[in-house]
Length: 209
Image (cartoon, rainbow, N blue to C red; front, side, top):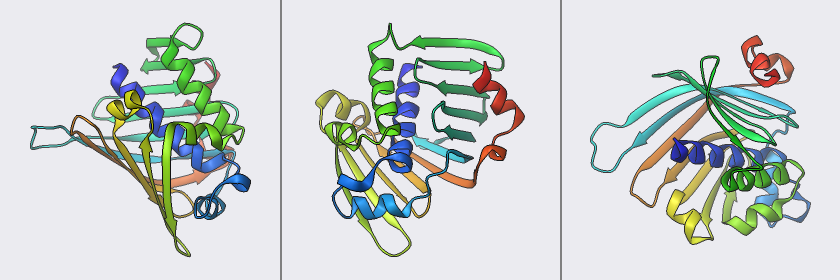
């Protein structure tokens, strides 16, 4: 479970780094990419994820919805093949199965949660330097699209996630993760909606719990 949570947490961190970082001190073309991206206070959409495990012919597939809410956190709701929800806030990471809390990680007790949330909310406040302390960032952009590659600086982080690449336009469209183990994950984002009406009543309730 922890490996899945680390992976999804890192994905959400990367999304936030693009949506809300301050581009004033960023190097070109990263500054150009950040200026291309929309910065809504609420952003929701669909994700389709495939994970190719080393030694297995058939990839594992899942899909669901995500919501990123400035000032509150992130919901990552897997709907297929098995429903479950991750909720990341400043103080905790909660894994929900239906209405039941399957796991709750407190930032005050778990070093991993403390690290994740430290990066998460420093990015929300526009601290690009925090991202650059963890990753080597390389990017390119044309008039309507961009690509970014991230390589972990620290050996422990590199061992956990390997290399990451993202591409998109006004929003992130694809994320590719090549793990050090040889496993590969691809996530495609679609059906993007913004504003408070982008969230369903169920998603609003999940944030209110």
